[in-house]
Length: 315
Length: 325
Image 1 (cartoon, chains in turn orange, brown):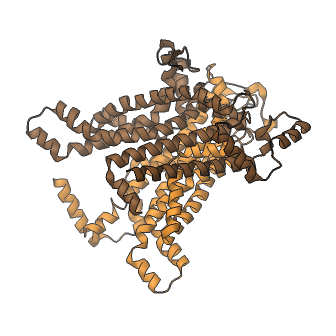
Image 2: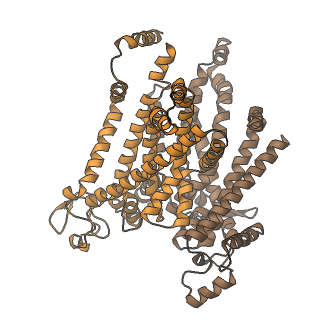
Image 3: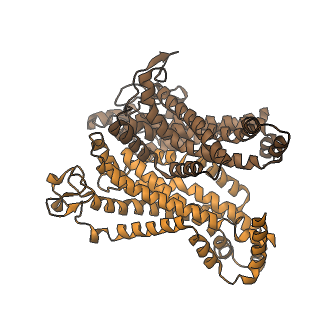
């Protein structure tokens, strides 16, 4: 009971002391969760490691001059022929796993993020068009979206791969097609709400062009849910790419993402050489789980029903 | 009601038709159509002969009608590797996949719901928090990675359970099943658990949310005031109310279990249609790929159709809304 009273009190107080910008409020609310902070830190470290990988790893795992087959399948902590210690062991071809993992991260992250961004832009454009056009166009677009969402994304991606074949461009295309509908649905539902608001009507009365209303007025107000979906979907894309690559239908051996590394280690697992699969898997795991944790927190903070929107309605 | 069912049936037919166009044109326009119809190791003369025999020099729409005509008679081409009709091969592998999917669904219901119930009734206990943390992990861990870990733990390190194949099977009513032998059961444990993990997490979350909502309702307070035992309140009154959404969602998820079995079957070498698909993709056995895709589309369309019809019976508003739109 006291909680409710305290809540009501703080809400009543808010407009008076509320001098912070929405971004500041968002930042402070986000930082309240320790675990989300930690996850965000981990993501930054992972991105940094992936970006500077060539500078910090002991070997370029795909430069044949630097890889020695005699180093193959060494246990974690063994010393390589070249003199450095392989803290995570080596794979079947004698590549240092630590180096291979960082190089794999580069590929996994770039495929996940690229497909995520393209899917976001595509889905955003289609969702906005649906919400703004209304009528037949909207119902046709939403029929297609609903139809696609009735199939799991993994199945859609697998279907496309089955049709298109292997390759990095094809994987990205498959991930984009598998994901655009989530963005389109999200944007459309929040754009529909915004479209009915007075400020859009006012803008239309002022004779502002459709494009300007859509991009400068409606779109910025749809960003919050889009960011949440974008975060979660990026994690999903990374794990989907790893899954397809693990199955052997994703990226080819020439672009060894984490999924490819895990697949390569699978055959050694039965003989107890666990590290070849396990460490790339752990790297994948940490990446995906961190992004999901941040996404969860973003959803809590940006949820309009929970924070700012509620305060506004209560007034 | 009849009008509603007919409308839905027609929509389903349109979906299958559109998907047949996408799959057909996808494989034949984007991929090289010759390789879909002759085996990859054929020489130039064979290919030329095949092109003429199969009518690939005809316009594409004519080829599509040929494909439709074949599909109508249940002929989706022959596998290059096995030399058998593709459709027959897939139907032959289907029972193994369905067996795995049903076992996973069973696990999801009988592990997920009790755990969710516990977490919902005692949200502050450490065990509940552990259950919820586990369900978050279950959501974010990639299925194939969990499968690998299960193999490593139970098959390699502990040596308790086998990690590949189906084990001994028994023939029941014309279908092979491994659920009735001890060896078969031990083989189905790991893949089913792997496949079920995502759905267990889902069941936990749904049940927990349902329980927490229901416990604050007036009917629970009233039952308590009447002096009904907690056991009866939870077992009869609360459970009845939360089961509807949970069971519905679980039923809907069955389709995705069948789809995700592609991953699980590949890891555990389970001889179902998912593994057949991956092998077919890797070996460029395109008739099987086309046939699988058509079958799985049909599968999903039928599931969605059934769910729609059941919904419309349970909730007449769905039907009315459809009429006005």
